[in-house]
Image (cartoon, rainbow, N blue to C red; front, side):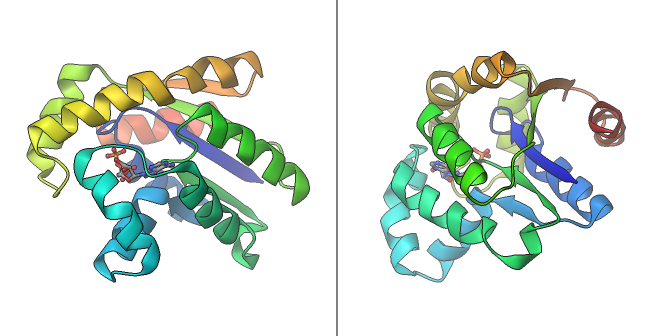
Length: 183
Ligand code: ADP
């Protein structure tokens, strides 16, 4: 049973690696960024509420993403494992997730920190060119990552749930490092 949480700055390659591993293990890849972008594109009430935050590189309010994650993790296909990409992003979200997993009996999650230096991630994001990948928005997302999300590395480290993988190598090398670290 694989239940995996991906941490790492924007541009670390979380999405690519999470998708590859989810295909490999045949479990759902749950990306809160993808769910939010889809909602935004369809202009659902969630998407409309999230838009201004995403455009600025700010975090969408905890309650909105927490409701989203609860809805997704309680679907039947998550009973055999999952990979979470982009959640939790704050200590509050992590605490929410811990109590959710306990209440739906899905504990035993592990956490990967995909480690990549700042100058490398900025370069990758500028190349990617998504709508929220303008340089000022990228810088803001990195600041938010450092202040809100990076504390989760110690949070999960203290719980002995954390594995660190060097994300600054080829895509294939990262995938095999992840498979080794998690096996
Ligand atoms: P990246 O990792 O490249 O920054 P994501 O696709 O994970 O991008 O997220 C894009 C945007 O979606 C974030 O900048 C944020 O506004 C919003 N978002 C995604 N996940 C969360 C979350 N767990 N909490 C709050 N906001 C989120």
